[in-house]
Image 1 (cartoon, rainbow, N blue to C red):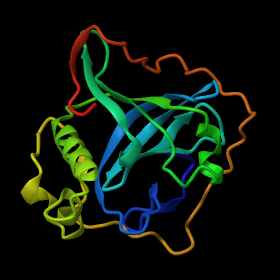
Image 2 (cartoon, helix red, strand yellow; image 1 turned 90 degrees about the horizontal axis):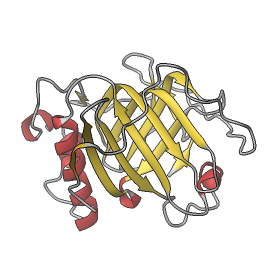
Image 3 (cartoon, rainbow, N blue to C red; image 1 turned 135 degrees about the horizontal axis):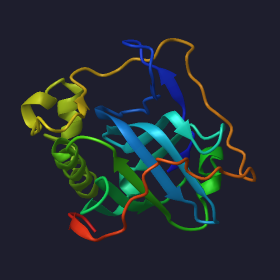
Image 4 (cartoon, one colour; image 1 turned 120 degrees about the vertical axis):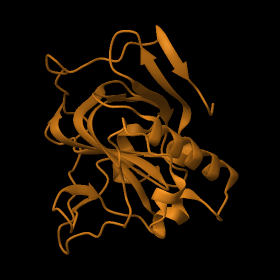
Length: 222
């Protein structure tokens, strides 16, 4: 788990995306997302933008709005993702909720410093469209990570450009599958220094707040 992981420009369209880690394969990208999290030692972060699902993590990138200028992105490792729940409130947008904490051994990293002291609770709100393609791939990846399965995996299909052969594609889900892996523009890497003692602005008017319960919910892995 990290605040402001390294970003870079995608060579295909010059948009920002998470700089790939060693052995990481990107699976899909989803736009029109609201992100919110409660930090272990108090305070909240929020933003509006896109998230990327990979074989190792979910990374939110604030592209449209953010609670503060020095909050650009947030990484959720699949290895430490706990109690993921997809909820469909009667009133309000669908959202994914869960908790996470830094990966063991990364506690001294600068990007993990704001997240020490306990679990970070997060919400990813889908402002439009369905989620079946995303959910199927997410929970399959979580199962593979927990089982430490290295063969015939979603990650392997992503690396080989075969996601369209193994993923259930829901026409109502606007998630974009990676049929080839993105490459970073040389020298485009950027990382924003997060000031832990700086205040965060409240969400702007019109920033939807997830309705906590009150609708259908799905918890596949607890």
